[in-house]
Every structure is written in C-alpha cells, then in structure tokens.
Length: 296
Image 1 (cartoon, rainbow, N blue to C red):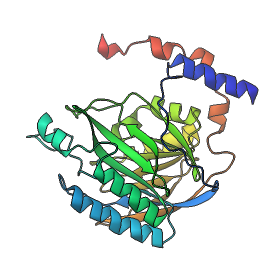
Image 2: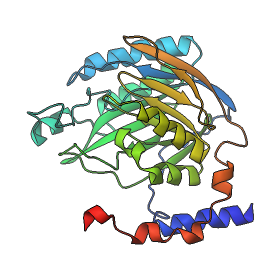
Image 3: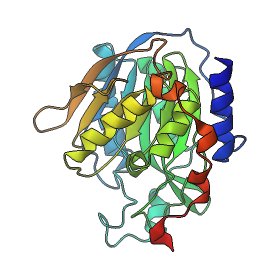
C-alpha cells in the first residue's frame, strides 16, 4: 500500500496537478453509505428557459426520490438548455450567453439546494455558469443538506467559443462515496478520468449533450474499467450506468423523457483495480514532455 501511494503521488506530481485542485465546497459529513440508487435524468431541457427546466428537475427528482434514488443526475447544461454551443446556436453572442449565465450562488442554484433538502437527495445539475464577465460550462452536486459538495467546470471546451475552460479536477468525499465529474467532451481524454481516479473518485458523473455513435459506449466502458470506477453518463437523449468492470448495468429504453435507475455498490475494489495498482508512473514523464505531431 505504501508503494501504491508513492506511485500515485509521483504521477500527480508529473502531471502538475498537486496543489492546483480547488477545495470542494461543503464536504458531506453524513454517515457513509456503501450502496445507493442513482437516477439518470434522460430529459430534454428547453433552451433559454430556466423556469421550465427547473420545473422538469423538480418533477423528475420528486419521482426519483419516491422510487428510492439518493442521487439524481441531469444532462450537460440542463438548467439553461445547453445554450453555450455555437454549432447548436449559430446566432449566439457573448452578451446573450452572459445573460443566460447563472452565478454559483445565484437564485436558481439556491432553488436547487432547497429542492435537494426537501427531497433528501443529492442533485447533480449541469448549467451555464457566469463568473463576472467569464462563462463556464459547469456542473454542481448539491447534498441533501443543500450544500454544494462538488463544483466542476469543463476543461475541454471545443465548440464553445465563449466559454472559459476550467482549471481544476476536484473530487469530493460524500456519504454515498467519493465523487468526481467530467462534462461531455472531457471523456475522450483518458488523462482526465485517470486523474480523478488517482484522487480517489469511486463514481464519475458525466453530464453530456448531443448525439454519439456506437463507439461512445466502448469509450465509456473503457473509462470505467481502466480506472475501476462507476460511470453515470447522462445526455438529453441517452443514459448509461456502468460498473467498474466495464459492464453496462442500466440504459435508457425507447423514446421520450425518462429516468434510468441503477444500484451502485461501493466496495473495496472500486478505485483500486489491478491497472491502478500495477502502474509504473516513473516511466510516464514523456506524456507531459511530448507534443502532438499535429501541433508542430
């Protein structure tokens, strides 16, 4: 175990992220749960309409809570209807995006906190975040106490002309396990998931938006298996919940808005699979020194 910890520390030093991750807000102090039910909200939000989308969140989160869920996850940009992608909004301007932005302490985030308290569950909600004159594609996880326990901003923002990339890859220890988050395009870069796993993530929450082909399932199954983590992937038109061994245990069926449920088991093997234990990070220095041939 000592050697494993040393290897983990060394690899994080190599990729230059020790000391850069911001603090997780409002770490949960509730009793630890080794098994819990997650509900993926495969629901289509309405663009530019926070009131409508919050009403959808309230409706489906209430249904999920009634059926025993302790964590509900929405798609990318759910609160605003995913307004930040220029390809989907050709007439988008920075000013219009700023108008739709929600501060981390804004009124709709506070409403999400109050909803989490009322329903006694964790809510993971994607939204267009405004911080001054900067915009971020973000997700927050709010605890049953109404506190933000995880706040992540998308680090790979291709196609999002007016968004600022996030700079931190945080994880949060909660009563239902240690959570990490990616957003959509981030999942294509194995380094992101690996960093979160090395930081102790047991469940990766991945809000996304759009349409993906068959390879998406293979990619997500690989991310789960290579990092020995649960993956909860939620789009407006697809939901996949994947075990640490790469098996898809739940998916959406048919058309229309729906909830997809799965029971997540947190055991001693989650986050500590053979691949993580048998890495040799002393050989990995080149990954941060080599440039892509296409960048030359």
